[in-house]
Image (cartoon, rainbow, N blue to C red; front, side, top):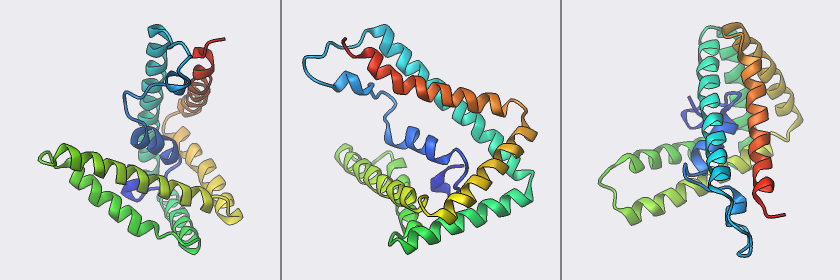
Length: 195
């Protein structure tokens, strides 16, 4: 389940960003940098795409583990709901109505699923969807600066990882792989730039 399905799970922020705001065929940032920069080699582009796919697969696997762990632990379910409410209330106190925004995003998703939608309408709707999603992320990041939210989030993350590890002992290894792959992806544009 994702952020848009009313969940604020441990991995939601990372994988929402990957899935929603970066097209599947997006090139690394250095590919679009300066006109004088020589384009990265096909092998480097291939490695970049493979790392992105690997990260997405890790996210899917961790998402399934998290879902099973939460399903098996009513206490963790309550803790997630308490955190979700706190985050929503904090966002609202900051002047952002997350519930309305999520409803709008769901409505846009339904429209985007309509195969009869004209190309120009689809393009405009995708632009609106991304803009609203980024506004939501900004509001969420701002709310996450609140000390009470940070404390609740840290405890939830710790308890979620513990429950996930109980569900699948490979969880810490998978989390470490996510961190290494993310770092690798961040380093790749520098490696692809001309020296």
